[in-house]
Length: 330
Ligand code: AMP
Ligand code: MG
Image 1 (cartoon, protein in one colour):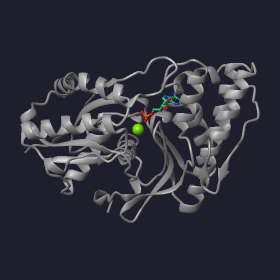
Image 2 (tube, rainbow, N blue to C red):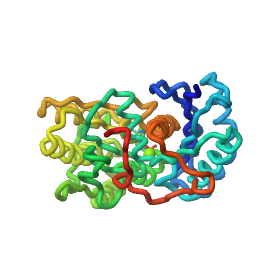
Image 3 (cartoon, helix red, strand yellow):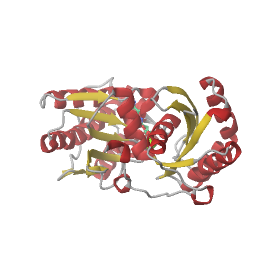
């Protein structure tokens, strides 16, 4: 019986393809990451062009690493959204082409749900409060009934955008999170920045403006990086703290590109221990955008009968995760 699902991710800077088995073995997870010129953010058309160039090779590499023949593929999953229109369309075209060639069903996947389900697979989380922190999202989420539900979110910038926009202001190339983390680890001087938690929501725009101003007025880059991390990570930890208290869940799972940050992981561990809960940190290989999040979630959805006709396999630039049914979790 055919048991492999291919997943294609292309929502933003990453074009990636992965092959997984229906029991959750990740056989390959190849990617090509578009990097914008120094000092600028992602240009959607330039990223889409980079994806177009990379698509064939990334797919080939993914099949050869997995050691799977295309004829053994049960379904082709792809990121339908949310994301940047031109980038999403490259992934959708690649998926439609592959599905037509292989005469395999097409399974659309919500990118954010993909981050969560892959995080659950690789950390063995069962019923977590989820902190999704990436370039495109900052949300605190838990599953209830038939869907993942948003308990709190950012009112303006995402945590990834905060780090990237600050880094670019300092002249770094996007994505800047790793460089901000490295600089922060060289300081322990805290400069007071706006701490803005409103109910269960967070806001980072005031923090970004003040941090940029500090840099312009000559404060040390490492001190500002340290202060941004301490403030912003404490804010999202506070919301997770409240979510654990409210839901009584015993796990907090962090997913999305910012999950790679060690200081964020430490803060969540301290917070979770106060609830006798476990902090589950998604390993870096699987925390950022990748094909495996789409292949695995596509595999779960396909097992529940989800698929669309090639003619319906479009893209949805804005597609909230709390509108997506998750029959595999019933
Ligand atoms: P994603 O959209 O899930 O691929 O995540 C990309 C985001 O993760 C970008 O905003 C990066 O700056 C951020 N990121 C990657 N590594 C780190 C890190 N070590 N610390 C903080 N942010 C990071
Ligand atoms: Mg993402």
